[in-house]
Length: 233
Image (tube, rainbow, N blue to C red):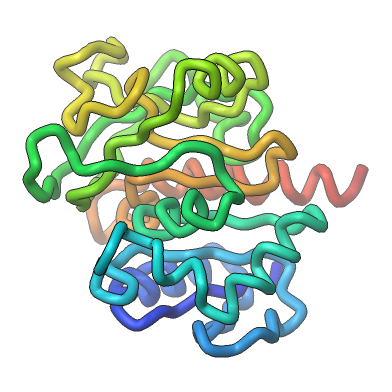
């Protein structure tokens, strides 16, 4: 698959994403924020970092980069888009995903490993994951508290759009595991069409044996195997 990784001023996880996607056997091209050409990619990844220095709200300025008009058109036409951390924030600011990301309840930047419980049975990135276990994935954010109205949250639940929830290592979804105060422990969501995915944790930082953790690779394996299956259907 040919995948474009968007690069904004302040992106700092773009090479992490590129390295991981290439290691998984994909062709990767960089998409500069001032350009509008998606270079005929089959999927777009928006990496983490601090686009435009995180001035205003995180992702609020990046949403107006020229490349994002093309990404929005691509997504609305059914193209696959993955946003991680700051990429998730950009997708919410762009209206491609519901909800928003607020400051962590601690009002501090949190960088550590957390545990995710897969939620959606139908979204490509989580559909193949084992519901009987959790996945250890690192986070690194100060504005990662997912928030949406109860009406939107109920709709996400009904449409199976919640990808992951923060959980304890043994799978309990509770307040103690919800380190940033996210609504209903939500760590990631997708759109109604299930072709746009956003999550705060960084699977690309847990997808290499040299890092001692390959749980993130399992998320990518689920994503790409389901995309391939859909293409063949």
